[in-house]
Figure 1 (cartoon, rainbow, N blue to C red):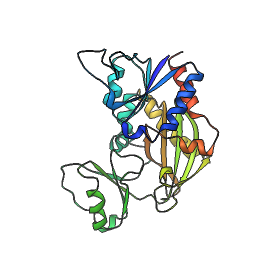
Figure 2 (cartoon, rainbow, N blue to C red):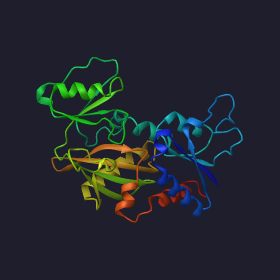
Figure 3 (tube, rainbow, N blue to C red):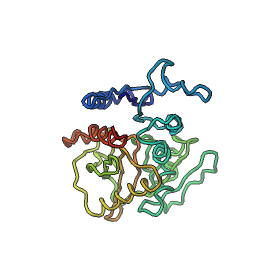
Length: 285
């Protein structure tokens, strides 16, 4: 069996450990997994053989997508090549506005969207503090906590003309929970706490610890998983992130290209192996 693991160029260089780990786990299972950069792809409508970095490269049996462009994922699906996570998951999860629409009705913080090309009107003073972030960002990129109009304009200006989300600050700001999901099953939870400020991202110095999910946390995670499953977009390998507002969990986002570095730091769970086992079961290998 031969698989590709697709990466954006900018992400590939900082994920070498994970690339090596997945490749090693693949070899244990008789699967050869090649990392492929999106910049090297040749995609074309009139020549279906143009699906690879080189015309003579072998066609993959399936693809692990660690990139965020759902067009690329859907292209391979159109060639009857299974993609994990699917193009539908990629499309839903890599735009925070789309995620909120998809999960409408489940507990989330109040959010508003500032569209590119629209009129930017600062909120009233009573609305602050607010969290400002790119609708299509990840990893804490350009996420700001603002307390007044001047800070709001600076934060929005750093993102615009890309679409912006402004969101109320969670009452329990400074901690969040990542729930790791592999093929619809909850694998583990990791509680993250900010070292300074309100951002809990592990790469930004947040503290992480393995966490036993409470009944409300598990129930909400299962509702998210069920929503994706019911819409033919199962979560093959993803992270569901929760914030805490007045004591209860609320959905922050769902990570399609979920990082697992902190899970390996706080546990002996081999999530890469579990992911590949799930792919083999899904494909009946």
